[in-house]
Length: 316
Length: 100
Image (cartoon, rainbow over all chains, first blue to last red; front, side, top):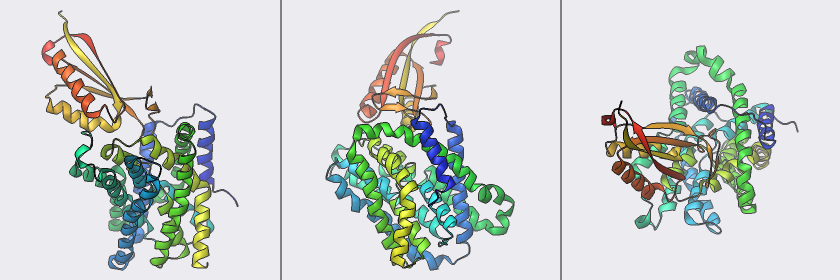
């Protein structure tokens, strides 16, 4: 099996980082690239979404939301076996929420394999971003309302943080722009937002490789348990996504995407939200697992594997 | 020209706290401060500053010594337990004392 060139850029960054090269992308560029990717994914989804009646996909959207609430509840007890309440809750929120870049690489993989998938998966991506964060905060605060740290925020501010976080605003905004403008309206912009999407993704992945290399230090300290969490959780959760995909009657491609979304862990929205909402939790643990292990695992092994799982259960 | 002695409070902490701290400064009616992005190493590990969830800020703020001390105490109590936070006070000499 040939590795997707997109993933090779990630490996380049990872290798350069591990070899302590002085390669470093300016943080302003990283910010710009992430704004671009989020907008472009939103717009692409909006274009597709405009083609179908909203009511037809409403039941699917509700099921996806349900999955978003369910995943953290499912893994919290497992994590609680070894971890304090706040850390278990924070990691549950990271894994319940999704990674936009993992999704983008997954879609690129399916396109390369010539497997089609339902166009509403971008909407699923948006819907999955938030519920787990809310559940995570509730789990972290359960039974300890009296002793929450004075630095932790009230609910109003938290919802503001979660709903108006950068990724939500850009994804939803892109979705709305794509849907309102339609294919003809987007035409003058499609060189940048559609054609250049994959080349820009490669630059972003190069930076991600460097970031992940920087996370390996945490793994050395936190050891086997974290490594196990980072590999077992996505494998387990991919089946939850695949199950929901089957329930929704999606194609093999769609089931694969849901598996990828469920298996992926957030490393942008969730860390920011959890740091504000649950400051007692150790961010090195959750970010180390989500970014240091699960992200590269999904990129290199997970995505093709979930596709096999999906093909197996859909009989494709 | 006459230089007046004031107290400089320097805060190095997580970027996640920026909004909260600025709110606190406003509430205390402080008149000015400077915030810069920072990287470095401390008890909470090395911050490379290249990644959203992983960067630090450094804040400098000049006030009279009582206000600066009280502010530093409040910040320590509120955030010192859960966040990467280092603060120090130093005497500085400024022109235009009425500004601070």
